[in-house]
Amino acid sequence: MKVIQASEPDVVVDVVCDVCGMSTRDGEGELLYGTMHASWGTGSRHCGEEYELHLCERCFFGQTAEMKRTRWLAAMFDEEGDAILDDVAYGLVKKSA
Ligand SMILES: [Zn+2]
Image 1 (tube, rainbow, N blue to C red):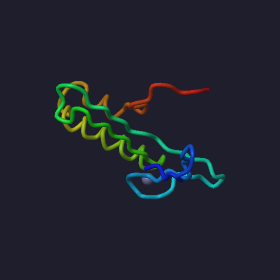
Image 2 (tube, rainbow, N blue to C red; image 1 turned 180 degrees about the vertical axis):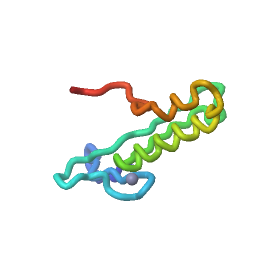
Image 3 (cartoon, rainbow, N blue to C red; image 1 turned 90 degrees about the vertical axis):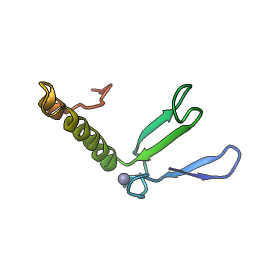
Image 4 (spheres, protein in one colour; image 1 turned 90 degrees about the horizontal axis):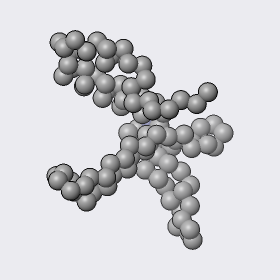
């Protein structure tokens, strides 16, 4: 969750992890967080709702590991089951050099 200081324009002074509740600032003051975002459209049960969650690095990868585990549980007896657990880049779409 963004901690915003009211001003013109509003200033984000901190981002608190929505899982552990800790600041996402590192020792040098940099904000380090991942974002989960959803914007539900027509046909969904949550049509018109938009969500945004901020996670510190530790909680982000904890949550993605849990998602991967949930997917594995649903497919553990299928051929692809173990491949899901071996996917070390689960959700990764880009990696800078
Ligand atoms: Zn956290």
